[in-house]
Amino acid sequence: MAPLAIIYDVHGNLPALEAVLADARAADAQRFLLGGDYALFGPFQAESIAALRALEQATWIRGNVDRWAAIQDVPDDDVLLRAIADCRETLGARLADELGELPEQVVIDGTRYCHASPMSDMRSFLPEPGDDDEEMLAGASEPRVVFGHTHLQFRRSGPGGVELLNPGSVGLPLDGDARSAYALAHDDGSIEHRRVDYDRDAAISALQERFGDVAWAERSVRRLQTSRP
Image (cartoon, rainbow, N blue to C red; front, side, top):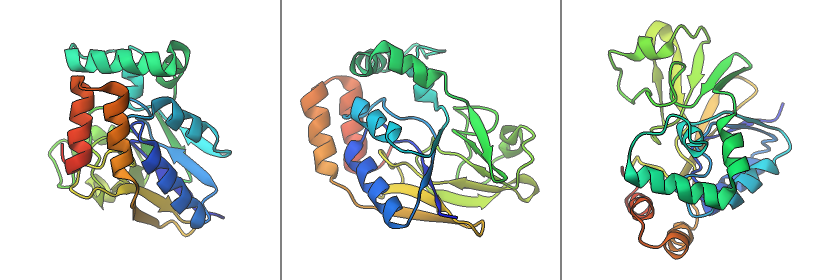
């Protein structure tokens, strides 16, 4: 069976997404697991959704910013509210609302895929063990849990020996490495972390041209430039 490409946290970065999809296809990936956070905070929001919708075999789950794009339980934050308004204008209210209706998690081949953790789309595991790891597992019984949200690519053992794996962010890596991050799940059960170069300057220029000096876009530009929070 061909590998499963695990794609998280695109954040409207089409040049990064296109580079990752090309790399995945070169590795013979034909199935895709899409782990949420598709459009908000990026320059090519509608175009990124269109590219993902063109995938023939894709399983989608919802991230926290997809929930926010659908105006569900949004924090009271002026920068975020402006970003959501811009996103809904770019995507259209109907598509933005559809993102908020995606399932929170899914189990495929004995692996649980969620956005941040089985208990929450906001609270997530970190590279080092934490006192709340077991709480965040929320009773998940699968031997492997895959999640994103923090934009940090890593894997480690969690409570009870469960494998915790973050494929990293396609569109906005925050681990100091500017390359796009994703993972491939192979037929033998192994998962391979991958990094891919892309035209970061094109993404930065598009953000500045499309959204100007609004606070959320300036923050995204800084994160793209530094690959740090």
